[in-house]
Image (tube, rainbow, N blue to C red):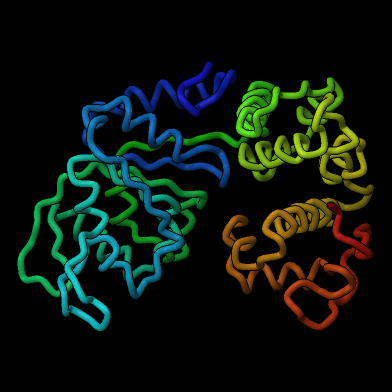
Length: 339
C-alpha cells in the first residue's frame, strides 16, 4: 500500500499505520521509536494529516542539531536586545507551530539542561521568549522521535524520567527494514521510479538477482540506505537493467556469504559482527566518528575504545588517529574493514 510517502506491504508497517491513524484524533503527545532511517518522520506526518490539526502547521526540529546555548532562543524565540546579536524580535519554533504539530526528532540527543526547559514548557503549557516578561499560551501537539532506547538512557541518567513520561503517553515503534522484508521490493521499485522521473528517465528494471541480494542483506541504514543504493544503481544503469555487479561491495559480500562469521567461540563470533557493523557504519558516515557513535547509540569515547579493541583501520591508519591497536581477538581479520 501507499500512503503519500509511506510505502509498505508488510504487516509490521500496516500495524504502524493503523496505530498512527488511531491516535491521530487525540491531543496526547506521541513518541515514535525506531532505528535511524526507518521513516519515523513519515509516521509523524501521517498522524498530522489524519488528525484535527491537518490544516495547521507541521514543524519538524532536529534536536541533535540544536546547540544547547541557542535552545531557548530557537524554541521559544527572543526579543530585541535580549542578548548580543538579538537585533530584532524573533518568533520561536513553538510560535511558528501554533495550533499545529511540533515534531521533535532525535529528542534523545537533547542535553539534560535543555530537557528540563522543555519539560517545564510542556507541563505549564506556556512559554516565554528570551528577554521577555510576558508568557504566551502553548497550543501545539508534540510528537517526538528517537533512535535511542530512552529507558536505558534514563537508567544511565542521560534522559529525564519525568520528560519521558510526559512525551511518551502514546508510543509507536517502527521496525527496522530487516524485520519487514516484504517492504523491500516495493520500496526499491518506488525509489527507482521516483529518482528516474526526477532525471527525466524511465525507471530501469531491477535484475532478479539484485532483488534476491536485497532480500538477504541486513540493511543497517534501513530505508534510507535502500534509497541510496537505488540511486547508485541508477547512476550505473543509464539505459538498461540495474544489475548486481553495480551493487555496493558490502551488499555483494553479504549475499555471497563473505560476511559469514568464522568458526570459534561465541566471544569471537560476537566480536566479528560487532566489528563489521562498526565498519559499515563508519563507511556510511564517511568515517565521521561523531555521527557514527550517535547512530550506534555510543559515546564518541566508547566508539574509540571499540575501534582500538577491534583493530579497525582506514587506509592503513587506525580510525580517529589513535596509536595502532593490539591485534584483535582470534578469528578477526584486522587487515581491512569488512565492507
